[in-house]
Length: 304
Ligand SMILES: Nc1ncnc2c1ncn2[C@@H]1O[C@H](COP(=O)(O)OP(=O)(O)OP(=O)(O)O)[C@@H](O)[C@H]1O
Ligand SMILES: [Mg+2]
Image 1 (cartoon, rainbow, N blue to C red):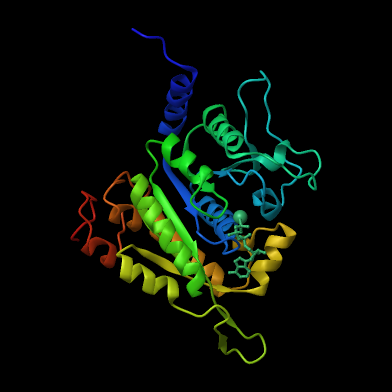
Image 2: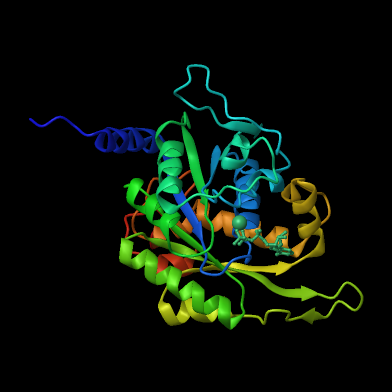
């Protein structure tokens, strides 16, 4: 029998690591700056608050923002034996791996071609001791290129993609390409988040449709993909990101926090069911009726 190549061995190593993780979700968008990293870090914190163990893999190699938004820029990846990497743990239940932990100067640019980025992402999947996790949320740069392809082709048990868009038609146009990408590579689409969906005027309380409203939801109806929810624009959310504080932990009520919580409840239960792929539910099964209506999986709560 022919000897296994280094590539094959690494692929096996990735599958072993990924088999210990419940749900592996790629967060993607066609357009840049629509809120992928914001959604990733806040969903991660919300899922940890719900009692899940969560990993974040930042595959934005040249523009890593996850650590900044989590307020853990000083984090480091441990490697006692020089081979296995240990993620940074900014709080109990959350493990983070990002290229930014390997940079001594935050202003230094990473100028890498696609092949080098692919190598780094595969190493982050194969060599990191992720351990047993309920979720791995994989943040990505905009587009449907090297990083997304490497994730989808390297994680054979990928649960699916979450596509983030704003309601603006130019963002929706690009989001449609993310839907097309997911279908082409055979990744289940868990759903679409419409972020920056309206801004409540802090003076008069009226809703200002900065990027329009409803564009992401309309796309979902048109392309027959699940809609996860609208997250409005909020100054407090933006400020929390800039300061690196946990927006989900604050006391005052915020529509965007409520929206992210609701999205996480759907992800944690119903929506994975509607993909028909992942029926290993965490906690009590609790599908939403709309998800169950079109679901073909054997989810225990189906037709209840
Ligand atoms: N709902 C929101 N309300 C207010 N500000 C937001 C909201 N969502 C995101 N932002 C802000 O918008 C900016 C862009 O968000 P973010 O960096 O998460 O986008 P991204 O899609 O990850 O960008 P990139 O494509 O560069 O990776 C950030 O400054 C973030 O704080
Ligand atoms: Mg980002």
